Image (cartoon, rainbow, N blue to C red; front, side, top):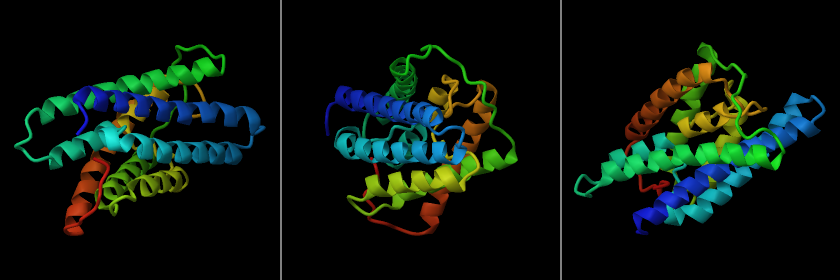
Length: 225
């Protein structure tokens, strides 16, 4: 296993790059789609899917490519209790993921000559959106826990791409993504007032994903860990 410092840097880099891809492609899509929201969302989806697949493949061997505090907590819960420092490592992972999400949002703004410091005004809320986030996160955790060895990158990327379209929330499924998108008043943004509801729904969804995986029985899956 690589040293903790390398794993933390990989998590920071991966989460930052993912948020940069999500927000940057959203800005580009909104500029070029001519008001066609379906085309804008499709463009945003494709960029996210491609970036996510590449980042998991490249950084997975270093850190496990969590890029998501809830994934880190799920992995932490499945780590043997004899492994010393696992709680501290999980906290460090979550901290650098959050920092990476902020850095990724700022980098996207800088590349498009926008104000680096922003706050989204896009309200996203209501039971339908919260249910969608719970469903999206449950599915993501289930895919990670059940993915066959060597196939997690493709399956996770494909699932997120599909969930962009079959969920009302466009599948954030990641508290770090909520933070980064909260700091961007762009196509991919979410207003700070909406963030708490999304994060709580994601936490419920992650727990549901773990429960579903247990009910499906043992697996030799090669999860993103």
